[in-house]
Image: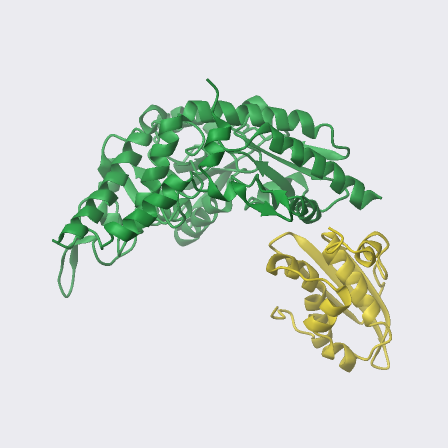
Length: 126
Length: 407
C-alpha cells in the first residue's frame, strides 16, 4: 500500500498546498473526469507573464488531490512558457508513482486543466 | 441443503489466484462474473473439435456448430421459460438488446409526444438508447422516482403511464440492489396498453426469471454476468411483436432473398442476427446455463441473500461508512456504500492491496448518484462462489482503509 500512498502523497492529500479560489483570476480553467466524477478548477494570477498566485479547488481521490497540490507547487513563480513545457512525464516524476491506466486519469486531470487554461483551449486532449 | 460453496469454488480456476500474496476475493460480480472450467472447457473443446461458421456449410463440423448454437438457444428458452425458441435472439449483450428494441420497435411505433417511462435507478444502458429514440421522434422521457431507501415510489404510476407507449425498467438495481415490484408495474402498464421491457442483467444470473409468469414483452440480459463469456447476450421478445418489427442490423443471414433494389427478411429469430454470430460464446453460455440450472437458481438466490444480510450487518461496524438502498431482505446480493471523508477510488485501491476486487465509481448510474448528492460509491456484489469468510476479509480491509486515511 505504501507504494501507492507513500508519505508525501498522503501529506499533500491531507494538507494540500494552494487550495482555494482567487477572487479575480487572470486565468481560470475547469474540467471533470466523467469516469469517476472528479472535478478540478485552477485559478491563476499572472504578473509579467509569471505566475503570481495559484489556487485550486478539486474533488477527487487522494491521488488526484495530491497530484493537483504538487502541480501547483511545481508552477509557483514559473513563466507561462515554462508551464507549457511541463508534461505528463514531469508531473508523474514528481508524484513518483507507477499508475495503471485508470488511476493515471486521476493524476492527470489537473494537468489537463492547467494546460487548457494556459493555452486558452477548452478541450485539451489527454 | 445449502449451496456447496467450497466445491463450487474448485470449479473456478481464477479463484486460486493470489494478488499481492493475498487470495483473490472477487466481489465485483454485478460488473461481470468469473467463469467455471465447464464454460472454459466447452469453448475450448468446441474450437478444437467442431468450429465452423453456422447455418451455411453442408459439411459435418458446420452442422455440428449449427446444432450447438441452436441448442444454446433452446437452453436459454427453457431457462427463462419462453414459449418458443424464435423468441430468443442472440445479441452482443444487454445494451445491444435494449438498443435493438429502441430502434426496431421504437422507430416504428413511437411518435412525437409519446411517453417513454423509465425509472430513476436505471443503468445508463437503459436510459441512453431511449434518449436517442426520444430525440429522433420528439417523444417525452419520464422517470418513476425512487425514495430515500432506494425503492421505487409507485404512487403516481397511473399518471406517469398516461400516453406511455413503452416502459423499460430494471428487475434489480445494479446500485441499490433493490428488487423491483415488476409484476405490479407490469399489471398497471398492461391496463393502459403500455409495452414493457425488463432489464434483467442483474436478475437472470441470480434468481428464477420466468417471462410467461412476468408477462413482459421484452427482456434483456448478458451472458458475462451469469458465468458465461463476454460478447453475447439475449433479447427475449414476444413473437407477435418481433414479427412486426423491422430488422436492427442488415447483412448476411438475416435475409431470405437479396435483389439489387430490395430484400426480404429471414424468419425469427435470425431476422435479428445479422453477420457471423458469437458462436463459441453461445456454446460457452449454454454450459453456463447448464451449470446454474444444475445448482438451482433458488439455492443460489438464498445463498446470496444470506451473504448480503451478513455483509450489511458487518458493514455497520465500520466507522463512518454509510450504505445506500433498502434492507437486505429487499435486495439481490449487492451493497453500495461510501465514506464521507474517503474517496471510493482510495477505498478500492486499499482493498486491491489486500486482493479484494470491488467496484468504485458511479456504476453507470450517474443520475442516481447525482440525486443522492454523491459522485461515486463503493459496491460489493456477491455470487454463488463467494463465502462468508470473504466478507470478513472485506470488513477487515475497510477498517484498515479507514484507519489509513484518517491517521
